[in-house]
Structure formats: structure tokens, C-alpha cells
Image (cartoon, rainbow, N blue to C red):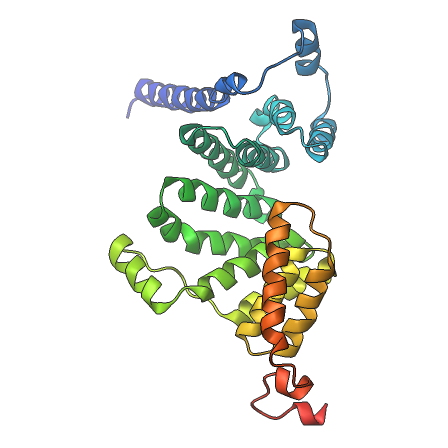
Length: 305
């Protein structure tokens, strides 16, 4: 290939890459339809030319995140996204996810576009040193499941093994991340609950069988999550109780469920979980025969404790 052809090839390649990034940069200009900007032009210029370092910009964005100002997080980080720093990129993906989940009136097309943008920035993060970043893996799992869940159940099933891989990697890279361990425990529990009939239906309707897991695996991750935030997260305590019931460890199940029902629900979703925990507790009360009877012990270890 001549030097002229090589130069022309690289010029075209660079143009296409820049054009793709430019398209993604402008992809969310339509968000102004949903969020009214009250800043004056002068205030906007100050925001975009504040001469902050990458670290200072991240700190500013994290403060917005703590206050639930997710659009401000996106706008703040989007200004420096071309540095391709994984710490910036996964936060952009998180902001897009939060914007998606916190605005119920958004159309499906808008939600899908936002998740596509989030996938794009996470892929950039992986290509720029994010392969060993626990947050990049965790948010890739969240965005994959959300994105393909918006498309249809077939895509969600097909990509669920990839979701699992990213969650496992996130837990390996950061053993102190409560959210990653809780999500992995919940994912395992949900896979275990699928009946053989549901698996057959999924296999023949969608040509993809859901991945399998074990309740022991779910218990392992949920227990680690509980160790990280003991007696504080209602959803995790309830799932631990349910998992122990499935494992036949009824004494442990009652312990976790009792902790769950004593926590004050923070929102409507937690009220529903608390109600389920109460219902499961009442079912177990029928078999209140003492520790040896409540704790499934086929090998007879209880007598030696």
C-alpha cells in the first residue's frame, strides 16, 4: 500500500472515530426537553471554564450525586469525558442510570438511548485501563441488565451470563463493596428460583436458557454484604432469610427475618419487603419446635454444638 493510501486510510479512520465521539457527546442535548436549565449564559460559561483539575471535577460531581442532582453530575463530568479516565467514565454511566431510574415519565426510546450512551462510556473505560476497576465492572453489570431488560426478556436472558461475570469480577476487585455483593447474591437467588418449566419455556421461546446458580452461592454473597453493613439493609436481611429457608436452615432464617421486620422501612419498596418478611416469619412460626428442629441438620451436627 502506498504512503498516500496509508495516510488517507488513517485520516478516514480518525475522522470516523471523532465523528462517533462527537455524536455521543451531543446525544443527550434532548435532555433539555425534560430538564429546564435556569442558569444564565454567564453562569454556564463559568461552569464550563472553571479550570478545575480532573480530581476536583470528580469531587464536585460526587457532591452533586450525594444531593441527588444527577443531571448536574452528567453535565459536570461530560465536559472532561474526552480524557477517557475510567473514574470519570463510570461516574457518567452511573449518572445516566440514575437519570433513567429517577424520571418515570421518560419514553422508552429515551431510556434506551441513555443506556446505550452508558454502555459506550463503560466500553471506553475498559479500553483505557478500567479492566481492573471494580466500579467499572459493577456498573457494566447494572447497565447491561437494565439496557437489555428495556429491549426484551430474550436479550436480558442472553446477556445474563455476562452480567454475572462482571458482578463476580467487581466483588473480587473490591471485597468491601456492599452493593456488588448484594447484587451478586440477589442475582444468584433469582436464578435459583427459576423452575425447570420456566427454563424450558425460556429455552424454546428465546433459544437461550437462563444460567444456573446455587442457593449456597447466593448465601455466600448475601452474608458478605451483611458483614459489610450489619443489621441496616432491609432488602439484604430479607433475602438472607429467604435463602436460608431454601437451604432448610430455618433457625438462621428466623434470625435474619426477625432483624428485617424490626427495621423501619424508608420507602414504599421497603414497606413491601417488610410485609413479605412478616409473612415469611408467620409461616416459620408454625414450626417453632426449637433450634434442632428448625435448623435442617441431616448429618446430626446440632447435638455436638
